[in-house]
Length: 154
Image (cartoon, rainbow, N blue to C red; front, side, top):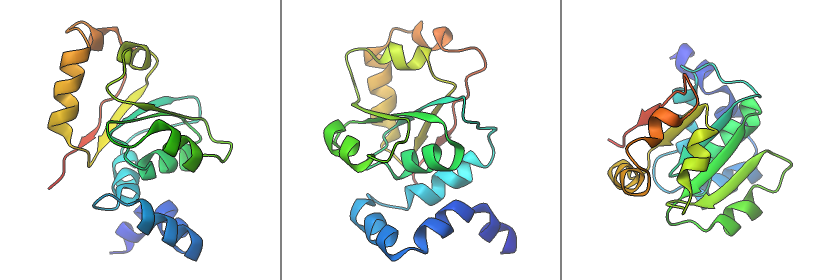
């Protein structure tokens, strides 16, 4: 149990503030994406120089974790949540670029991405949209050694 508590240090600290807890309750779209993203990210070597494409970010809990904890630049892509709404939510000096997925130019983000992550989103829909919008040659064109972690809903 102690190791598990240490794994979620950012999420636990975030949740300890009453204002953040209200924010979390208002923006959670199912399981706690911040906690799941922190667990997933703990297996990766993320640094502030990386660009991450967060597919299916929803209201951006996973995006906030990646930008705040690691200082990474994050492309926050979602199908249902408005990029404008997420932009307003992310106003905090973080390097976050929200956009609607599927966009007309998903290749641009893929080519600039060190890590493409998808946490708790409707993964089959996202995969089908990537296949539909990108040619089958898009993924080999992404940065060399880009990491593709996925966390499927239970």
